[in-house]
Length: 457
Image 1 (cartoon, rainbow, N blue to C red):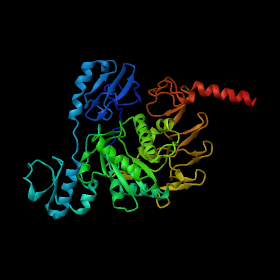
Image 2 (image 1 turned 90 degrees about the vertical axis):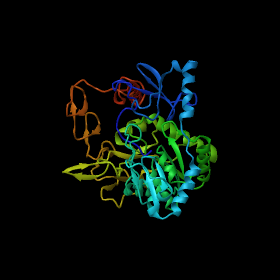
Image 3 (image 1 turned 135 degrees about the vertical axis):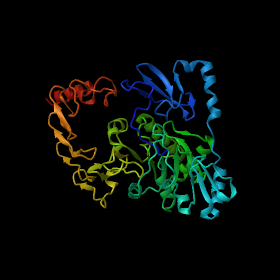
């Protein structure tokens, strides 16, 4: 997976102005597509099954909920069971061993065929094929440093952590005494863990090319949006064994899913993996597994509303192959990565004392960006996007410096292109889950507030 990023609504078949809800339920009875079980979506037009992974119409499976009850529809859908390929991981592992035994000048990788081979033992590939050769031992152990990134932003959107971001991850894990890492869409973290004897790692990723470079016990071809293991029982055994061996060393999910994906299925995947781990290791049923989740800062309300124990940290994650997702200045304009870590680990364990871009807030007791100013009225460092936020006494919260308080709308709004009376209500209230209002205007909270006032009186 490292794929990520076109920031768009997952289901493109529904107009962007129409709210789309993901129905979280057991997927075993759902239709399938080439990417595993579909998800059930609900909109004003009705409920329907669609691909869990694709954020456009590349995957054509789209079945109305009522139609799925028809036998002929179910019969037609059965073809996908035979169309989903399986990886021969033992054969790939044997091939890698042979490649490593050869001289580095004889090693080659064809990106067109996705084949790792020896030049002396294979027929020449076509002239228009993209061949990468030679390959050193270091390159074979760190394929993310040279493998061409998958370029379909609507499915994979593949970007890789910088060495600095990877180092930060390992610093956090060490501070929490965690030595086992379940890497989901974070192959660069997995590669670093393999070269460090203090850590054990298992990579779950949608990019199946990784099976060419890792042992069958170190890689699982995986779809994070439906918790689907493409190699079925074979990979389920690998995952369960990793969980069992992680019982006493501490474990953390380090995940970097596509940014265009919906939050609801991602959180359900974390819950499902947590349940499986607790079942295997006979752990008390208390809380989620530790998680480090890379996701944009503007997704904070959705995530914290569904899992309040997961908090957003101000660390700005950087990527090697994205022109904007790094903190650099170009042509007088500073690019600040919008990607943050969401975690249920103590924020104070994220030590950024060696990074001049961050400071320790003595009131919050954890590191924040140097531009992030502590607001005594809000009781926290309020900046989300790298700017220094300002406090609005009317709204009683901090807002971006580009916002202003509109008296007619009675709220703070983006000053540019603001039209009074226009409010985008594409999501439900973060408090009561009902549509048509925001949390700040939630009738339920207003009633509770009135009750407290009467009691105090």
